[in-house]
Length: 503
Ligand code: NAP
Image (cartoon, rainbow, N blue to C red; front, side, top):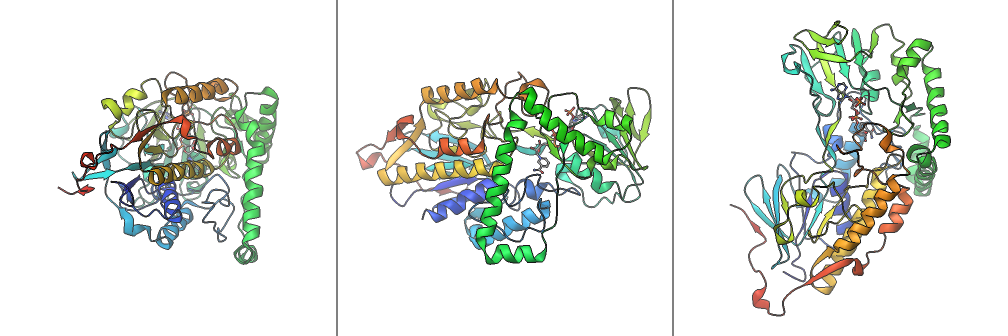
């Protein structure tokens, strides 16, 4: 099981899994297999294909630093273009050869004697890996709202994250429930084709200007010819987002006023009607929920064929949506822009670590991991986009790349020194998470309800600080932080079963 015989399982073929595979290749480690439950790679960008779906972080930053793309059509690339980019990267690195699509890992159990993770697939196969890199994403499965009568509706119903492209919304009365990051993109995109668009707002959001723009051909040519300019563009955009960060994440009335001023300016330039402006203005502190970016979301409500409903929803009936004031808002289609079941707080499937302890048990009091990556008692298991690693202000990929680099360092150490495992020490993990939760007190997120928070109000989703600081903190793997497992001297004790058993 040592030496070159070092199987690695990457779970998920989204940005994290693909990025990890490339970095392993670059490190000369080719013994990995990527497991993807869907029939194609791409994760978020494969699944979110609703009209208007795009990244709300500039694409020069929201792309892999080691696979920069000079050809983005605009500052904020649409979803299909990001998916195309990922497909290109996968082909370039020939990752399909090491990929098992339609293969879901449904259970994992650590065999401490062998220093091996036994992974079970949905097809009943067993895969034995020395190291697991879990890149399953945090916002994957759609959250369907718990509104009575949803299934009684006789028109078409679809969630933004599972768009039904067979349904033509042209000429239809469409109702959208939700006003979050997905809604601000889908609403302006379907307003021009629907005969009537009714948007049901429970909580208005702070929206700042996007200043989106297409890149002219000459700029793309320049970026292609001189990669320095592409790197410079990334650098500048990254640092702009970092420097703006405190406005979005610190619990400071003064900083918050800057955000509010920017957002109110955006509202004034898009909406003239003061009564409408009032309805669209949030009452919670700037940054508490995700700050949205759009140049046209608010302006959409100025259209005669778009209606904003702020009355609470009572139930859904066969013909439309009934609000608490008794009105029935008839519709031919309902779009649920109601977000995701946040997968950060629970194990994605049963994961059993050392001494038979499950990850759900370990996370009973909230999801915690050392630097968001490793959990004590779950050796050689590296999480990408794990607890407290989400940003509210910049590209999540900056964090993901830091996690990948850290995992590659660990793998190299395991291989180089022939170690059985690295298991983060419980005291180190506890100290780290105490410091994270202490810092949370200075952040803005606890003042309102959002997917950032667990049911008890604690935040195990976001990183309370700058991305640059996270990158610095994760740069060096310190072996003293880990309990090191070693193989027995007697080779007879080594596990010699095949690494992949297909039943
Ligand atoms: P979200 O931010 O969770 O928004 C869900 C919306 O649905 C909220 O307005 C919520 O209202 C509303 N809602 C939920 N249940 C409801 C109910 N029963 N009745 C009425 N309204 C209800 O979801 P999202 O917009 O899909 O965004 C989720 C996250 O995905 C974002 O924060 C972001 O991280 C990511 N995202 C990123 C991009 C991107 O461009 N990078 C694009 C889309 C999404 P309340 O606010 O009152 O709860």
